[in-house]
Image 1 (spheres, rainbow, N blue to C red):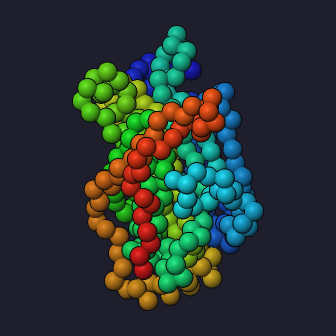
Image 2 (spheres, rainbow, N blue to C red):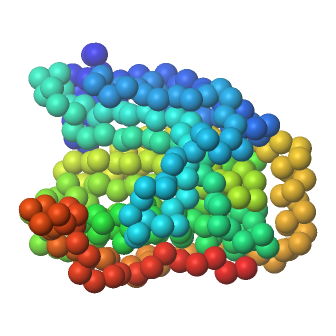
Image 3 (cartoon, rainbow, N blue to C red):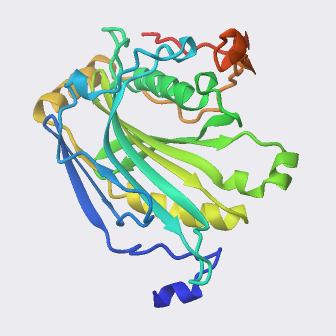
Length: 294
């Protein structure tokens, strides 16, 4: 706690920041691990579903059968880990300045055509864009629209290739003047394929504070320190399948960069429950989910 005496917005205190714990998961023969600090938000429990995850057990995935029409096409997932970290000032400031949340999930792509595979970067890019659509696009019906993908790039971490991108709130200058912390509220994600129709998603959510440049710097540092420890070793069978796809599509590559998607959000009005309407009534449809193109 001595360290916390000197904590500030520029250099906040994260409890046990350097005491890393390595968690592992056997993903149906593929081995995954990550090293990270312990959970440091007392009133939010962590979730860990390892060390064995059957990625082919369909019953373990989200039941998406009751979604709204604008959610059709979502990809079901199952969780591996959820953990939270608080950023604290000196002891006399009891509330956290901000938070970072990490969620790790496996997703299944049911409607990917048989001629496509997540091991093909061009196909996997389409899968990622659909995932972003359902996380941040018109299907989410967000109060503040999001810009995604931002900072689209490939990262080599250990022996594995990951696709990294971010999503930021789409705020104008007036909104940022009124709510300066909005600039420091953003998400970062990393993607890696696990099989033709399965992928791993490492999702960070940063709920920052003002001034944004302080918050973004320290939260990016924590996130990068964590994701730099990622290790993913595919099973021999899956590695062979990956090599087959690479030989079949030798020229397939991710886009080197991408501009944010130009989504048009659905327009709704509040429903009237006195006459039996739903909570929100569609006024005008926005951008539909992207299709898969072999």
